[in-house]
Length: 299
Image (cartoon, rainbow, N blue to C red; front, side, top):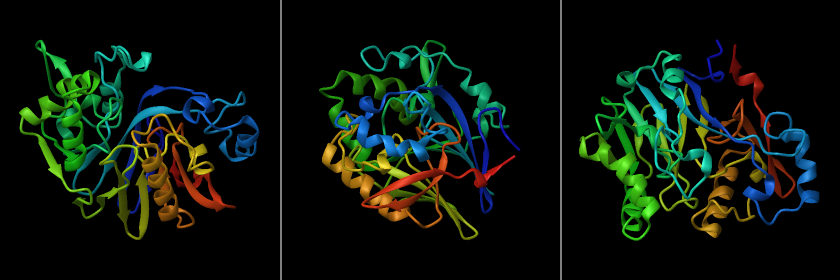
């Protein structure tokens, strides 16, 4: 059955649904400044129509994956959040106002029903809805949930916040209120969340970045986080992205991810890939390609 925002994807006994916050078409050169139009032209054959439009713009979005296991409701990354002061960053993020919680409710999920919030990494578009503004202060949105932050990731950004005002702002309005409420857990990079869900270290985009692997009844899926922002990076894994904290490490993380999941049948769910956001990776010459997995969608 299709949802208000996206498809239902089943992995054994686990279902995965998507809650959209923003859809943001972007230019290839914004993501990959060093790529040429000629080099990217062959990619359109497998990028279009799902991940690139006819004008060549990448179709990207910011969304949360709702992972429902037999024993828990989990959210993987929570987007930008409403009302956050993000002046100086991406303009669309500043004082955002979307019906995100209503979209979540359309999937039958209230804030109180969420058991775990998993954070692939601490960036403004991945942990913003961890809090909402009530009674003149930022309070946890999901009051019953255990919020998992990778220990080295949190430690790094906590240190950086001493000199970077934007990071301090993010921690102050989206992370520290969760910590203060006793809802945060700082876990190792390979933490096992449940029998079906675990973290897989894929550092590079940020120092403690992880992907989320889901495995049930012999089927496997993985949520990318920001190891890639668009499927086009399958074809150009080594090209620097301005979004990676460490460009060389970001490329190494992408290659590790692609090598791990290519030609395995694993469903790959992109944290910023446009609808349907799910596909499979296969080898293509010296690089890789990404094809939408429409067969994996129910409804």
